[in-house]
Length: 481
Ligand code: 6PG
Image (cartoon, rainbow, N blue to C red; front, side):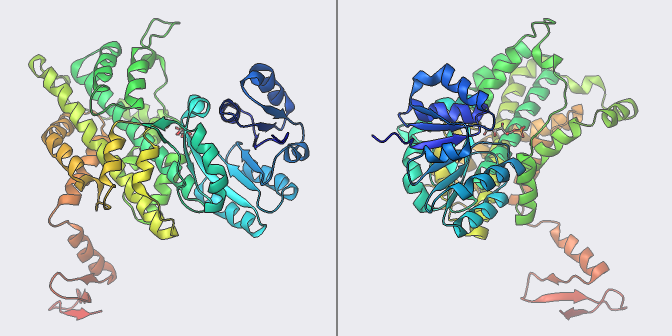
């Protein structure tokens, strides 16, 4: 075997470090590079026995330590730091080498970088990596974009270090240029929606039942053995069951209730707006975080705005079990909507950019390793196995599951409105469901209004063409536009 390393990792903060260790543990020799060499040294000192590491100090040394075609993973902060590393790296590389960005880059940046490097005879792979620190080490879900050619040499390595479910790796070539990072972005958007829905379920139960976080932890743990079984439900039980050592209070009660974000949820919504895809679940989740992060405005509103009476908020003792079950069903149905919308967004981008994304395969690689891993994804994989449904909501399994929970969903949203509990995720998901299945939408009236004030024209139900009503004329006659 050559002394040259099979792959290199530059950027050894925790994700890069764990990815490098994962590669080494799987038998690949890994060249290491970091801007400051302390991280490189500590990795080798602490984990050098896990496999073959080739520590290097400079980028030149790093590049020289790699077999060709070189596979160079960069794991640095998204944005300018990524461009800075690429700019330094590229002059040192040779035709056919592959640069792989495993950070949470914006897919448009990835498209730009891919085009740029392609022109210089290099491959650029934007790879989404999900699973946090632990996933990077033990098996993440990996979503690589870039050329087919680069996947031929990179794929087998990534498939080996990825999580495995039923013997299938949670890694597949998503599509050209920015497809991998796009899919990772939507994954994160769905992650936002999923967490928002879980948080609303918690809020409804805590308020309605007057239950303690520890009691709620048990409910979530139980839910985790059913259809809702997922990593996020599992860790919800863990977080709710945790007691703060300093105060003895439930941990969730000592955490400031202002949710932060690094931006992938926001990108998902911005992109969805451009593509014209209603990702209301992700949008509500992103806006709910934004609302939470305005403490002054919240304090002013708390002091000024009345809510319902306290009696409206409590669930009568004899209805408690039924309420818990209703919330579970509402959570499930809302979650189906969030996924359906995310899948629509991936489908729209795939068409827009000619990516030809296999949507069923995305469910397959999200079954393990990633943050949104869930039992549910097997069902999504099945839903896309034969033909692409018009919406995940109409795929037979989900259609039946949501139909089964529909009345419960309505009761929960009605309860939330009466009790004054904010449930933007549950409520907007139900509104989406009802809008999608409506015979007629009031969009017709909107078209009429647009035509009235701006002569924007409308189409008719009974014949082709565009029309305008001469609203200012006494007889309001209609003309073909
Ligand atoms: C993952 C996560 C990971 C991270 C995101 C979301 O798939 O491993 O999605 O990428 O948690 O950065 O973070 P924010 O909530 O801070 O936006």
